[in-house]
Image (cartoon, rainbow, N blue to C red; front, top):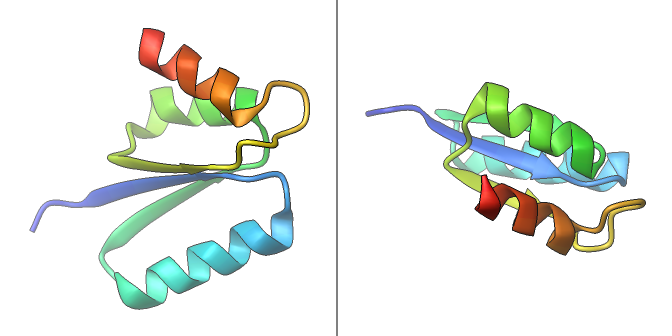
Length: 74
């Protein structure tokens, strides 16, 4: 099976780690990257090429909807 890349973009560290642990427990072959804010998330997208992104819409600075629009444009 091909590797499935997931990116979690969430500013709450506790929640981000908990979500990553839950996903990893349910899907052990999944590769998970994490980002704590929008700019870091965009950088990880370029480096990591995720198949799926979980993103908080209430990120500080640029919110998740703005980041999603940037991703879509690119």
